[in-house]
Length: 143
Image (cartoon, rainbow, N blue to C red; front, side, top):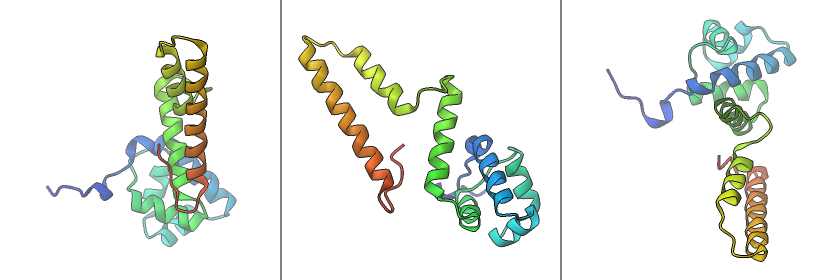
């Protein structure tokens, strides 16, 4: 049994949130599963498994599917990760950054109100920088 390189590991835990994205984009592009598979260099059975949330998907295949469908790979993976996080934590209304911010503020033992205000401003600025990095070309997602 050969060991997979880190870049070849599958993203099986994200498939429940990737499948619907691929399906909707394929429908919008008016492509059949066979057409999408051929253009992405895979089988229609693989596309069917991904769209029905079964099996797993390797990053290179997901990149190919995103290219064919005109999707941004980083955005698709980031959204799938956030949806996975929310599903695991049972919080549909709060994302990872909001959850992290809330936990820090809840544990912060402020000696006075000024310390808490300063910390809130710092966390807001850090969140602003993260969003800015995501919007830059090639910025990717730090999540």
